[in-house]
Length: 265
Ligand SMILES: NC(=O)c1ccc[n+]([C@@H]2O[C@H](COP(=O)([O-])OP(=O)(O)OC[C@H]3O[C@@H](n4cnc5c(N)ncnc54)[C@H](OP(=O)(O)O)[C@@H]3O)[C@@H](O)[C@H]2O)c1
Image (cartoon, rainbow, N blue to C red; front, side, top):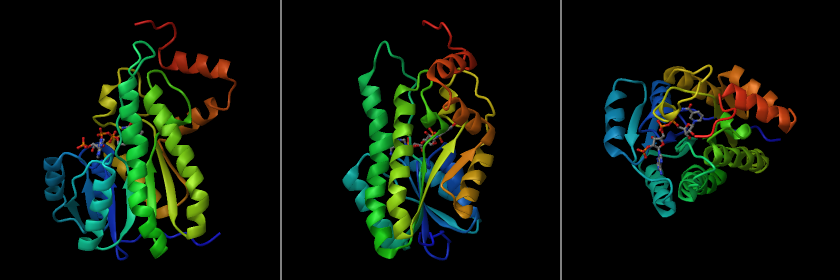
């Protein structure tokens, strides 16, 4: 196996998608603290501009780069113009994602499509813009934010967990190629982190993490390398273990732990 590239601020810039709130926003600030020029993408430009102001005085800086990751041509153009203006993207945190709690009945096919469009195909659009450039330079590190929800099925997570499971399998598969190209591909599988996304949950969220601590774990993971960045570890390992059990036990334990058993409404 080749030596895998590890990003450094002297080599080029960082790019964070989904940076107008939550984990992406906090990680962008942390990367700027660590000296990166960080291009930040999301649809809400005013929030990106506020973030850039908040980063003033840090070692690096934040550059708003608004965009919608589901816009294939727009993302190609965005990456091209970012590199022309600020230099090569050496570290990308593909973090943008959405979550709708959904049920089997009524079945909301549109919400499934939207979730897969943003979480999976939006991420594919970003990879399509990045990988040819990084491959040509043989220099690049990409972290993709999935979730421990991608390890196995969870109540109300049909679209979300399904999209995250797809991301995990997709990134595992691509890693066989990127390893041979010398590029670093990582999957980030957080448990529960306090963000607007988890504010939708009305079930218990064990080991809920503070946002700033999560951002430090993501950025430490980028510096250390290694394929999977997980936090909090306890929840991730419990879920990994539960997924090794026979389905009968898995469904029963998850239903009890989430208060789902016998739930009808
Ligand atoms: N919070 C958790 O406990 C947790 C756990 C595991 C995994 N995750 C994952 O972490 C990532 C961030 O989640 P979060 O909790 O920080 O949620 P969040 O605060 O809701 O942030 C989601 C971000 O994604 C952006 N986004 C959504 N659709 C987009 C699109 N089409 N194009 C560009 N940007 C888009 C949003 O910005 P705009 O609305 O401005 O576009 C926002 O900045 C997600 O992938 C999520 O699945 C979160």
